[in-house]
Length: 188
Image (cartoon, rainbow, N blue to C red; front, side):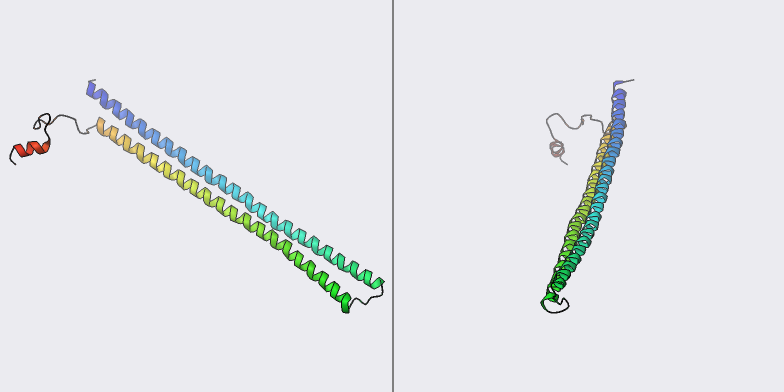
């Protein structure tokens, strides 16, 4: 094998290695992107479950508070009736109605706080999913870039090995002159 064929073979081999590396990097970046998106989705599902649990606990606390409010009203009624106070009218009724109103306001506050907390968690889950999609798209862009770069390197190596431009000096140009100077001297 001549020296030129050896160089061509080396260039061709390097081109094949470039392609193999490009496909390997493409696969790796793609896998990293998919794994990032899968992890983000798993995290978002966990956050969604936490939000649902927050609402469930809020509803449970509200129900317990409402029950305590009714027990308070019953105790007030019993105490007033034991003192001979008429509970169906006047100040006694106002006290019972105010207790019921305060209880209902507190119940709604407990539920609203749970929903607000769950809403924040749901927003976080949405952001987590979006970040996962972004991470996957970013990794895919890196994968595509590595594939294109390695393909271009391989093409350059194959071009050098199998018919790329030869670097022979131009016989029309003398050392130290440019193509323009040669053109002008010939009078063309």
